[in-house]
Length: 91
Image (cartoon, rainbow, N blue to C red):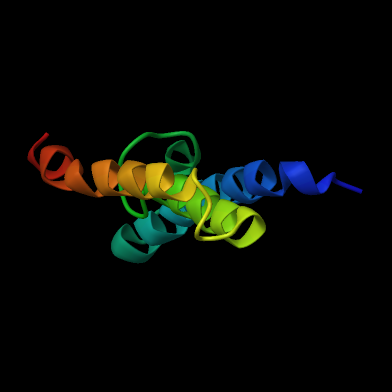
């Protein structure tokens, strides 16, 4: 079994993998063509960076408590990820 201290990391990694795979599905839905390049590509929708940070924040909040000292730091990281959305859309 996975040690409970690694659950946040495993959750974040699984979230990242799921978002990367879903990019391929979204691309197929939009164009009707399979392009497996999206499994490893950066950018696009859904954002694997956002899903990773969100999953990490929530899993640490659940495991350590939403009143822990690290949770506000993770919220700031989530906000910084959210704040980069206009920059991503312009590039």
